[in-house]
Length: 478
Image 1 (tube, rainbow, N blue to C red):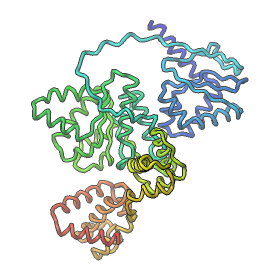
Image 2: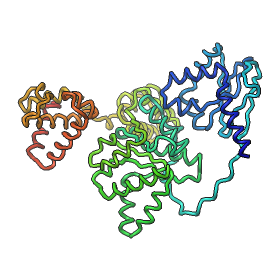
Image 3: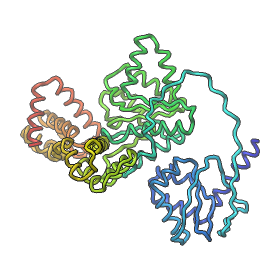
Image 4: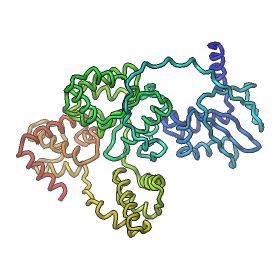
């Protein structure tokens, strides 16, 4: 059996090396066109099954339904155009199918290019059956089955993060461990966590998958301490094969929780079990988080999710309307996407409100109804301020020049206003610490973090400083 398997593996390697030229060149073209992570997750696993020249049909095989569905939804046109170009056939029909247990062998070691190319599919020998796992208490996954990759809308704002998540779901613990996802409120981080868990369970129903918010982790730890069940808590957490922790930033300031999570993280990481974490900030930007945890969160891959662009927002609305089985006119989708731009959760909430009004009043969804439904949801737009605005207002408040504030001088009359300005830049803009540092005389991001932390601590204890901050903010937004 082992010799047969080795021979099959050699056949597979030889097939890869002997791929017909058009397929090899087409794959190279796609590698150049697409993000490396997307290519690795979706395109690289594809194999050529056949090319029928007379019928102009190219048949490719994907290793899983997940890969196939993502290509169908997002990358089919890229594949179609690439291989049409390589084959010189604008009428090429691209066929995709799924088979997770196949390798390919070319009978003659070459590609004929005829209507019936000499490609056969060879089944892999089944490996010996897995040993039966010991009977352990069943763990509730806490997963929401509604959140899957198939109903997650991919756009420029989340494409890289989505590719990383699907890669993790395909082979947990093998790469991108831990996977750290960060982004603002309501952008789809929780959806991706559940999608990873649901996909991992679909592939291996016996896998131990657990979704938890950081608050739930803390509460469960408190109960274990209270009722002397720490051994049971530790055994449960350290047996998980895919651990999905949401909103890790809420562990800030909870020393006992952070200590226990540190040991849980180490145990799972050492066992090559997958850890996926979400936060609203980068690991090193989470205040009150132990440095040893921040370091571990950066061991794997860090991926961010941005606010969706207009086209993605429209696609999200149309997808939700389709799932909820009601018609959403294009002009209504556009007006909602224009008025609500930064938060997917608010976007879907607005559509839910609109649908409810339409159903209760028994009238079709229209522009008039949309304007009526959206009015209570729209908050006054925030005044957009820049780093330069903040530097100007702070320097005027402290009666110094902006050039002095961003200089290398560290005298007290300059360093304190500089700290306040950095604190306000972090509070009122979306700029990262490195971006802020570059605007303050090319300072390192750690200097900005230190400044923000110093002012944050002083604001809690000093009424005088709080009043100063309020005065500066009034001038900033007036």
